[in-house]
Amino acid sequence: MTREITTVGIVGLGTMGAGIAEVCARNGLRVVAVEVDEAAIAKGRGHIEHSTARAVSGGKLDEAGRAELLERISCATSLSALAEADLVIEAVPENLALKAEIFAELDKIVRPDVILASNTSSLSITEISVHTGRPGKVLGLHFFNPTPVLKLVEVVRTVVTEHDVVEDAVAFLGGLGKTPVVIGDRAGFIANALLFGYLNHAVRMYESRYATREDLDAAMRYGCGYPMGPLALLDLIGLDTAYEILDTMYHQSRNRLHAPAPILKQMITAGLLGRKSGRGFYTYEAPDSPVVV
Ligand code: 3HC
Image (cartoon, rainbow, N blue to C red; front, side, top):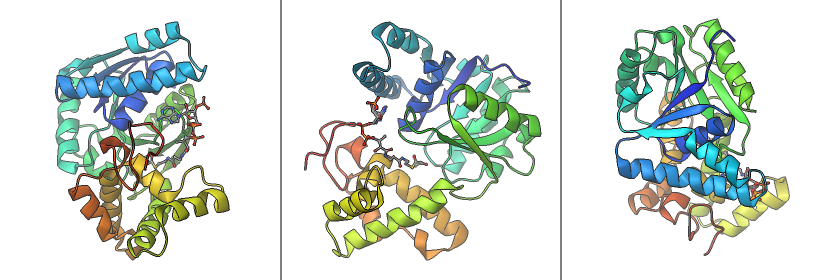
């Protein structure tokens, strides 16, 4: 590893950013997280507090360890707080213009050798990278939800990502206890490209009233051994996020498998985003609570 990474900058403390921040802090790294305002910071911190409380009640962390973990995470509302970061991971919503603006600004703030990573699930890392003066030091680090639990991270290199940047990213992920796979820059990478055709197909079955949500989910859990059924998983991912991923893949490949099922858009418009809004295909009392209805 050529770079020593002790301070990680995280841009965006939504579900994924908060999960990544937690994993980094859990492994002894300092984290500086940037959000748009204090309300967004409070929400992100709340997510981390909830998740770490769960780890304590599950016996995976003690109270003192939790307090130290939370202390390692500081938050700010300006990207300039990331000046001392050794690596920055961006995890803001899937909007290319927004990501491009953030990367262009980060490029001016952090040291020239610092790696800039995006947690995008389907946007082009190459297109993001050209908004910086260091495209060779830009790559994708795509984590999975729930981040504290799932080990996979897709490391996405572009045609100009430098070899040592990939090597350092892989070493960094090893230190977090993650399992990296290194791949090229294509919409959906490996996991989402394979997963979302299946999820979309399940939504179409539900939409056409071919099967109930319970039966669709039971079929894949009890017939195929999946930890969650497809509709429960979509609620976990967030229907808005799922729609963006499908739409981006569809526009890139024109594969009808990825043409978002119409009901997804209707549910999003009606505010049914899944666990994060309390209701999606199912209804929830709190973000991590079991299904109520
Ligand atoms: N945060 C932290 N820890 C969590 C958690 C969360 N949100 N959810 C579950 N856990 C922990 C629990 O504390 C528990 O830990 P323990 O073993 O120490 O008690 C462990 O995970 C298992 O949880 P549960 O016993 O409550 O429930 P399950 O055994 O059903 O596991 C699950 C829950 C880990 C969510 C499992 O159902 C699962 O892996 N589901 C599939 C998730 C998946 O496919 N994710 C990928 C989505 S695609 C993606 O992220 C890409 C992006 O681009 C959209």
